[in-house]
Picture 1 (cartoon, rainbow, N blue to C red):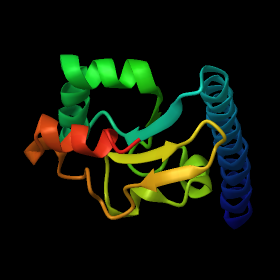
Picture 2 (tube, helix red, strand yellow):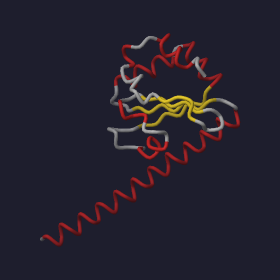
Picture 3 (tube, one colour):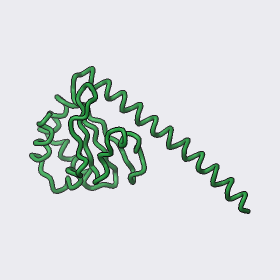
Picture 4 (cartoon, helix red, strand yellow):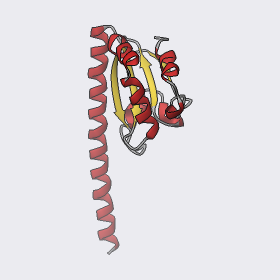
Length: 144
């Protein structure tokens, strides 16, 4: 019985490592594509880490859909949305960008067209987005 349990545990761990690795490869490939697009269009890359269960993520998304923020994004940014699930998805990209989700989501990272990180909300600056105004979000974005 113990052997069967150990065998199942090993198979499960191997499957998880393989699946998680493939998922990380996909998000890193997508990030690379968005980075190239950012460089080609000479726009900043705005990476937004969030999740569908997160009310603050929805609030930030609604602010970004308003006319002024939407126009600013279209003119100056390539936007790359990253689903972190329950802090268990796409963590390789999070780590590559300095772990911005440590203090909550949504978390934002801004990179210049050459790929240099210009800003990261590691301190959880947007994690209370439902209490933020459009002007507060714009103030952040207009820095770039």
